[in-house]
Amino acid sequence: MTTLLRTYIDALYAEIETIPDFPARIERSTLRAFRREEYPVVVIHRGAEVISDDSPWPIVTRHRHLLVSVHGAGEDAEEDVETVFEILQPVLSRFAAAGLVQIEEAGTDEPKYAQGDLTRMVVTRRWRLTYQTQQDSLSG
Picture (cartoon, rainbow, N blue to C red):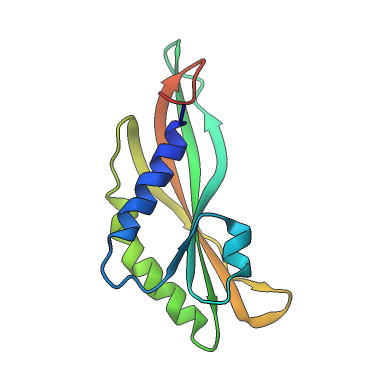
């Protein structure tokens, strides 16, 4: 059984893979994204989740942060990262899927650099997914 969150992440990866001439590599692991030699790299990963107290039993309303990180390297890393986010913005802001109530942008973190190496960086943009599941299930 696949959780709804995993379904959403897989659907986003599938949509990104169809973007013509997408200027970044796609990775499904934050560790592998960090270790890659070819940049920029995009990875989608899980963030914090909060459960609403006002959901009608047995339904649970979940508010989950989805983290989209873009790793960049080289003299143009900041520019490359911004270009990737510009392309991803409509994909994420218009994302729709079964069970998804809402998706909204929740902010962008400041760049983080690799152990003081200003030529390698990662920027993470947070999105908040609101979706519902049964109390005893994460798959819908």
